[in-house]
Length: 102
Image 1 (cartoon, one colour):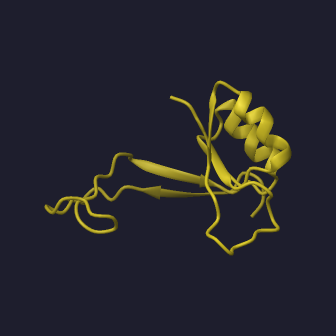
Image 2: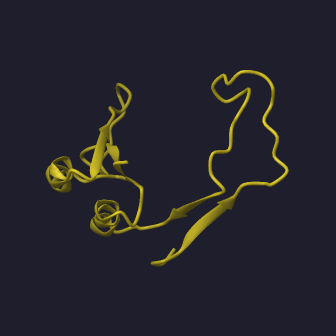
């Protein structure tokens, strides 16, 4: 996909949550948003700059060389996680995502 392309998901107006309590992937689900947009930004620096500036609220695939500047940015929350034992990744040296604060 090229720059500026995205996928938009709109909440179905007739949606009614189930009555059971939430339980992982089952049970009651509440639709908190009217819509969600997923922007496809392949260039890592552009993706991270978009999160840092507030253009995007969430980003994945943080590269190690950008990690330090993100941690110091008061407008960004960096969240890390580990890959499962035995799984190796050569695409990005650090795994995690970033999101705007607030």
